[in-house]
Each structure stands twice: as C-alpha cells, then as structure tokens.
Amino acid sequence: MWFRAAVAAGTWTARLSRRLGAGSGSIIGGRVTLALCPDALARLAAGRQVALVSGTNGKTTTSHLLAAALASMGTVAHNATGSNMLDGALAALAQDPDTRFAVIEVDELHLATVAEAVDPEVIVLLNLSRDQLDRGSEVRSVAAALSAALIRQPRTTVVANADDPMVVWAAAPAVRTVWVSAGATWAGDTTTCPRCGRSLAATTERWACECGLARPDAAWTAVDQAAGAASAVRTTGERVPVRLSLPGRFNLGNAVMAIAAAARMGVDPQDASDAMSRVDDVAGRYSLVTYGSHEVRLLLAKNPAGWTETLGVIDDAKALLIVVNAREADGRDTSWLWDVPFDELRSPTVVACGERAADLGVRLSYADIVHTTIADPVAAIAAMPPGKIDVVANYTAFADLRRRLPSAPAEAL
Image (cartoon, rainbow, N blue to C red; front, top):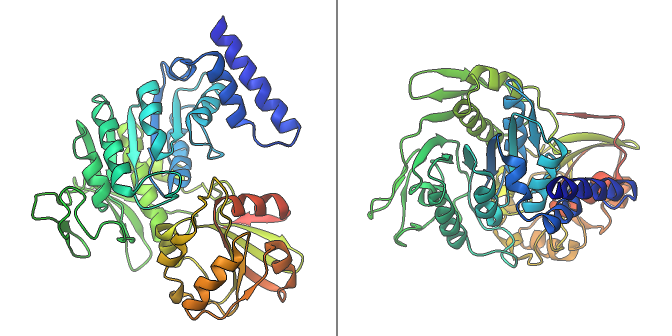
C-alpha cells in the first residue's frame, strides 16, 4: 500500500506541475515518489522487458526509434521528454505501469544506478565524448565508470558502437555484447588508446592499438549507399532497408543500433525498421515552424561531437542562427566552442544568439565567419528577411525556443 501511495503522490505532483505551467512534471513527480519509496523504480520495472539507452549524443533519438520498434510487439513505457536521470526513469514507468516493454533514456552518469534497479534486458551504448565537463568527468573516467556498471549486469546484453574506441573499451568486459558499426565522425577524444595511452592507428574502417584494444567485428553495420538506399546489414548476409524520416548519416547509425537492440528483444528487424520510418519528430528536433514570414527548422547540438554531425545537416543556402546558453543543464563551461569546426560553415548569413552570444561571437570571429550578434533568438528571427532559416541551439536554448515559437503550422522533416 505504501508503494502505491508513493506512486500516486508522485503522479499527482507531476500533474500539478503541468497545470501550474512549471514543466512536464516528470522530474518533481519522480523525486516525490523516490523520497517516499526508495525502491519504487525496481518495483515499477519488475516483470517488464527493459532497454536502457545511454551515451553522449543521440540518446533521445535512439530511444524514440527503439520505442517505436518495440511498439510493433506490445505496449511501451518511455521517458520521451528526455528526463534521463533516476527520477525521469521512474516517472516514465509510473505513467505507464502495465506495459510489456520499457525504453529508458539514461544519462551516462546515472546508468549504473538505473541499471541496478531495473535489471535491463538490453543496454544500448552509443558513443562517448566530452560534454559538460564542469558537471561530469573527463571522457575516460566516464567510460571507466560505465565499464564497471556493465560488469555488474551479467544477464544484460550490451548493444555497443564498435566504431567508438571509448565505447569499445567500456563495453569490452561485458558478458554479452552485440557490436554495431554505427559510425563515429568525431575523433577528438580518441586520438590515444583509452586503455594504455598510446596513439591509435586508425583508417576510415578500422582502428587498433599495440596493446591489443581494437575495433571488434560488428554483427550489424549501418550502410549508407551512394544511391541513397540506406540499410542495416547483418553478418549473416541479411540486409534490412532503412527509410528514415530523420536527416543525417548519424541518425542512420542510431537507427541500426535501435534495430540491433529491438532484434535482441524479439522484434523482427524488418518490422523494427518499418516502425522507425514513421518517426518524424523527436521532442521537436528537426521540426519546421512557421514564424511570421519565416520557415524555421530547429536543430539541437550541444557539444563538439554533436556539432560535427550537425554540420552535415545544415542547409548552406539558408540563413543560420546559432543559440548558446550556459545554464546548469548545458554546462557552465563554454570552452567547448573552440573545438567546434565553425570554419566549415557556408551559410550566407550567420547570427550569434543566446545568453552566451558574446562568447560565441568571439569564436566565430576567430573562425573568420562574418556574423552579427543578437542575443534574443526570437528577435533575431524577426529581424531576418523573409525565407528559410536553420536554427541550431544547445539544450536549454532549444527548449526555450520551442516554448516561445508557435507550434502551428508545423511539420517535421
């Protein structure tokens, strides 16, 4: 009875938070339940097939894709809003208490705690790179902590990115591993071996170190053919077409990771791919919003690795607004701006926006990018000539824009 009362109290608190306009309520609702019943997460997860999705970039998108795939087999609980710590995981399970499956996006620093509680069938480990260094740790320390967490889950299958040396080092000790060649464009944190510190020998398809740490053979490979026919290819020779509504080569990698995880949980790979093709909105990412005489596309990039991938999605023919905040959820340290290859920008008009627009403007100046600075992104959009605009924002800046820009008429890419 106490457990049920704790869940009810958290649900009521979350509902009140939403009614007061204080947010989605997932965090405060989860905290209330955990304060009243510390083992509530384990109780809520009991009897379900649970998948955890973690890594620096792509957690939200991959969890949405995996949830869509599993929904072809049964009901799914999912923290779709991206509340990815312990309280957010609990709130998602409490909201849908009777589902067969659960897909939980989990912050890397909270994976160990959540995994201990929910005994996951699958853990998806996407990539590891620097992010919010003032909040967390350097990348190797995060990888070491994840490795220790995976060792403590001998019944869990780890679906891991074979192309990321940090992920391989972290996942190698796991008892059950499915390796996926999902791609890894960013190499700024893996020029040296995470195991021994020597320089890594790397080509476009392989990497290895003298100490023996090397790219494992992948059971699944993301293949993006020149003709545009993307597919997930299994070592058995099976080829599963992947037709995503989401842009970017990196999202193909996310999709193949999700297909591999879904297959491990009993979903036919082709059924999983078909279900993923219908995902066209991931918490507002890639959405189009009409604002006055402007068509605005919203993109999220919050660290150097994410920006490196996003550069391939930006439309060089459009005006570009870059919006950077530095609140607690973003990380107070903006030194990461200096690792982003902004010199590759080709947009005809670039505007620096956000609470740290001045920091961003200095970085753009050093990259020889002609730009203007307007701190308020909505004012910057209004000041632009009519037409199409790409807006790339980091975490809290993206959330603020979604609240401030009207949502209709809108359609996803």
